[in-house]
Structure formats: structure tokens, C-alpha cells
Length: 376
Image 1 (cartoon, helix red, strand yellow):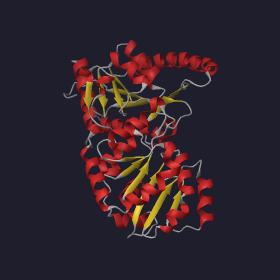
Image 2 (cartoon, rainbow, N blue to C red):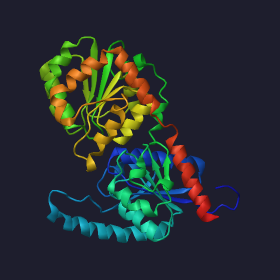
Image 3 (tube, one colour):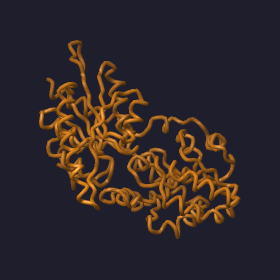
Image 4 (cartoon, rainbow, N blue to C red):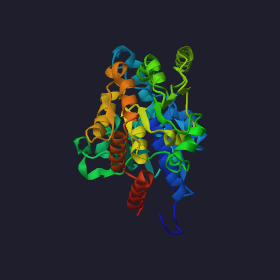
């Protein structure tokens, strides 16, 4: 994209549903904007999902499609799903005719299916970004006609044509990597003792019931570990239940909150992180070199979180505790790990070796390459 006779650059970004899809999408958009300040960027998401709030907050326009996922348990409910899908296909065509994108980028999630399918039918080049070690259904269906598929794990030729795969890593929120605080300063900012070993528990933006229940049941054990403290992000849905349990326990070395807005400080404060195994969380842990215990969510398509977690656990780059085992072993495992300096060092250095840096820049290199090729 160089030269003075540049045409208007229009970039469409589609997908969402969870923070794991939205943060990478925003990172890619920010990098496009940084390189091409004149570019117009339009997001397409799913009505009623998190992106409809997060994307405008980041300063971008978004259109919502009335699309939803298939109900695998109640097949009769899928008539509604199909009618929404057809409606979304029609809207997707209209969006393409109005916006005229030079490229459509899909990051996974409900909306990216109909939107990128429509773009491919119209001959608009598409780039896919697959965050997980086990490819999602939407991206598998779109892969044959995509120009390029940006991935975060090796071995993805099991799912995609090898010649289209580029190993870029997952983009993460830039502020996480630019935190200048010491661990002591970060702990102070998070309202805990600056000198104690610190465990950060995060269940994703919505919280994680199994992790929260395991912590509630283990509060007395945590209370007995005087040299350890816990920062516990419970999610909004579980906030009241967890706060009441903590108050009733009288345990003083746990600070609980529904949501953490300053994740850069929270990560910096932590000696050990307990987390679900979503792709964006794992990319953050890798880039920050954080020792972690991963508790994969069983409620996700194709059990991809377990596959993500095993990709680390098999390299001694994280400890995996299965969701079904969390009630019995999570609290003991985290208390034993956080006080084992050698184990923390091993996990931290192994996970850091898996990090892929500058993912957003690498992805936008591919975007530029595709646009240059298709417009020259």
C-alpha cells in the first residue's frame, strides 16, 4: 500500500462472541489503522453479543447480524437458528454492496460465517485468524476459499491447506506487554500485601463456575496458607455468591472482585495464574512468561480448551487440572505450586519459549500482501 495514487482502503473485520475473539480483532484493526490512517474499518458482529458493546467503546463502527449458534441438544430450536442465518446472509450481501471492502478478515465466532461466506462468493479476498490449537467449524468451512489463514499453533495443516497457513500467534492487548510496574507496586495497586506470594484466579470475562466453587470449598485451606494471598476475579454472575462465601469464611488473604479492568497490573502482581484455557488467555500467559494452572472449560465447541491446555502441559509449560477434578484438587495444586520456586521457574521459562511476538503486525503484513496482490 504505497504510492500517491492510493485508492480508499476499506477493511471489514467480522467475528466475536467472547473476549477471545474480540481482543484479537481489535488488535488487528488498531494495527491496520496505525499503518493506514486513511483506512475505513467496519466490524460485523452478532446481535446481543459482547462485541456490540466492546467494539464501539474502542472507537469503531459495528453492524450486528441476527445470527446465533446451533443448539446441539434441542434440535427443534434450530428452525429459528436457520431463519436467522438466512436473514444474516441477506444482510451480509447488503453490507458488502454498501461498504465495498478490499478485504474481509474473520476472527471466528457466529457472525464471521455468513459474513465471510458472502465475501468469498462476491470474490472479495478473505483472511482467517484461528486462535485455537483445534480449528473452529466456521474457519474450517471457510478455509478452502480463503487467501490466508493466520494461526497460533504448529500442526494446523490437519485442518487447513498447508500452503495457506502462516504462523503468526494471537494478538494480545498491547497494554499488558507495556506494564512498567514492579510486582510489589502491582500488588499494592491491586490492594494486596506487596511481599507475599500471589495467586491470580481469572475465569474469563464471564467467570468460571467450577473454578469459583473449588475456591469457595477451599477457602479455609487458603486461609491457613499465611505466606500466600489470592486475587480472585469471579465474573459478574458469581459475584454475590463468592463475596458472601468469602465474608462468611473470615479468610483475610483473599481479595475478591467481579471484574478486573487493570489486567496489566493483575498479571504483574501474580506469581501463579489460575485460568481457563481460552486462546487469548494462553497467548497472554506465553508472552508474559507466567506460570499457570489451566482448567479447560468443558462447555466449548470440540473441547478445544483441553487441546489448548495440553499443548502447554505436554511441554511442562503449564499444569492442567481437568474441570471434573477441580473440586478435589485445584486448591491443593495451586497452593503447592505457588510455594515451589523451582516449579514456578520451570513453568515460566517453558511457557515463554512458546510465545509468538508481534502477532498483530504479522497478520497485517499478510493483509497488506493480499491487498497489494489483488489490486495490482
